[in-house]
Length: 194
Ligand SMILES: [Zn+2]
Image 1 (tube, rainbow, N blue to C red):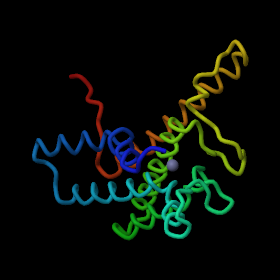
Image 2 (image 1 turned 90 degrees about the vertical axis):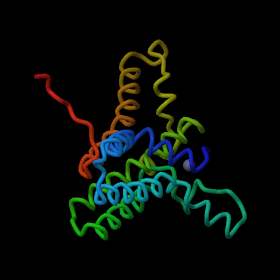
Image 3 (image 1 turned 30 degrees about the vertical axis):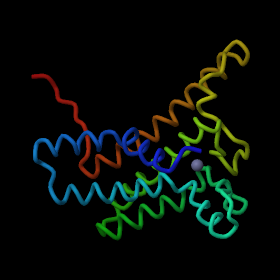
Image 4 (image 1 turned 135 degrees about the vertical axis):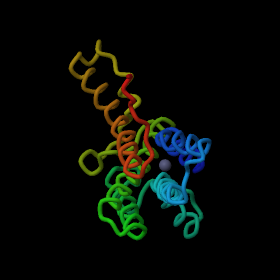
């Protein structure tokens, strides 16, 4: 499994690249306000916690059993989308505690989901799959291996479906982060030519 710092850096620098770009640009232009800084710190805090959330059971395992077990929370695999529910709830509660606005709280919950899913993507690359769809499908799925499927062996329909699903999942993780960040003022914009 990648080290915790790799999960946080992957989410902050790759999935949330637009926020890094907007922050650096604002710093150079002297536009970053105190309000913008508090948004950024909250996003960084929630994003970092949720990017590490799938491995959270390791804390309990280390303290209680002295092992590195982190893939199961009782009968539930921690690297599954269903295990992201507590992370999303944490994002929503943190957002509501800070802003007292349900909309903003929901966007932070969305951001938390993107952070959690980015962890699964990185573990998928390094370990060859996660139980994304548990309990609907209990075996590990590797989105990145799905991209490598050959249409000679499986047929063109399976090839196209596997390619589309794997790319769209990665796209949806990035889009969730982009959408949530735009609601906090971090975005790139299309400028029409005049
Ligand atoms: Zn992990």
